[in-house]
Amino acid sequence: MKESYGVWRETMVLKPMYTENGELWSVVHELYRKLIVKMSPREIINLSCVHAGASYQGMIDAAKLILPGKKMLPVCISPGYRICMLPTLSPDSEECIWVSYHHVKQAFGKNNRTFIECRNREEIEIQGSVESFLMKSGHAQQLVLTYLDRQEEMWELSSCIAESYEGYEVY
Image (cartoon, rainbow, N blue to C red; front, side, top):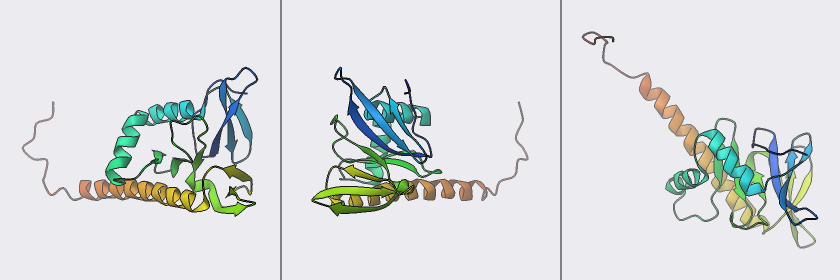
């Protein structure tokens, strides 16, 4: 059991869990282990956003510019490591499960329920339909690729400066 947790490359799923005392904690599914964390999934997402350099609201506002008109937006914590978490329900819902799109091999239905198969072959039940999950996963991928494209453009622009340093004073 952990007191605190931040999303990282091996984080696959954050699932809400209620304790016997009614406290909202998380079951964290990582690539090679499962943890119980004394934070709600949303608290973990909030902390992870701050560790990445922005507030949760800042991440959502940025995603709105790239994915206008979309609901239940993904949160891109690190485009370089493809860490982008998507909510299965409204992020304000205590029942919301957060999924790292990069760790999902497939989504499928079984007995009128929706499951994802993760990279480690673990099958996890999630809320919503397969179609809804696949659409949200596509939004997460689009968000990550847009950030990566923009980073690449910045690198290309920085190598195209045609001005010399002559005439500038160094302080």
